[in-house]
Structures are given as C-alpha cells and as structure tokens.
Image 1: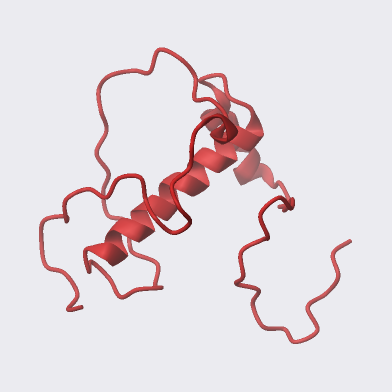
Image 2: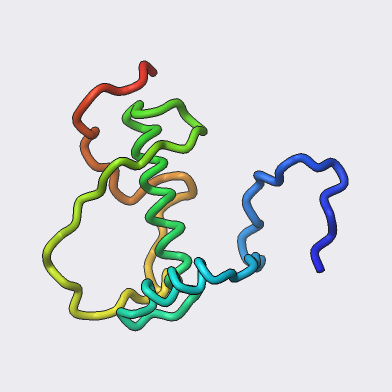
Length: 117
C-alpha cells in the first residue's frame, strides 16, 4: 500500500527517470487500454504513447498561447490521418527522445482566438 501524503498537498513532481510508477486499474482504464492495445502494442507502450500524445497537446497549447502556461487546455477537437499504420507502434525505448520538455514537433497554432500571452 502506498504511503499516505502527510501534507495532503497534491504531488505534482514527475517521477525520477528510471523509476517505476503505478496506477490502479479500474474498469474504464482497462477498457481504454484494451482499445489502445488492439494494434498489437503492450500496456506499457500504450500508456507511454497516450501520455506522450497528451503532453504534446499541452506543450503545443502553451507554446502557441492557446491557454495560460501550466493549465490544462480544453481539447475541443482532433484531426485524424486516414492512413492506417502498417506496423504496431514500437517501444519508446527504441526511439531517440528529444530533450526533456521539448516536443519533437510543434504544429502551427490552431485557428481561432487565443489567450493573451
């Protein structure tokens, strides 16, 4: 069992590199992971891909001033490429990662009104 947080304050520091983190799997998470694993990836790679995708959305929103930095952007839509992938996603360990906090690709700013920087 996890040690309770004595201050009650939320823990917002990222886990140290090389450590393991855990999350309790409930029905919704199990169902979501089942969907993400359908293309043939394992649970760890599915979680890495999902977290990486959401982090890039946040970085892009902050970089382009869509919302104030360090706030969660409200995701209203997404765009899909009609081309199916021919091979499953490989482990993130097989791909060279950009420097921490830097997205490999920041798209053009989204259309519409943005929060003043």
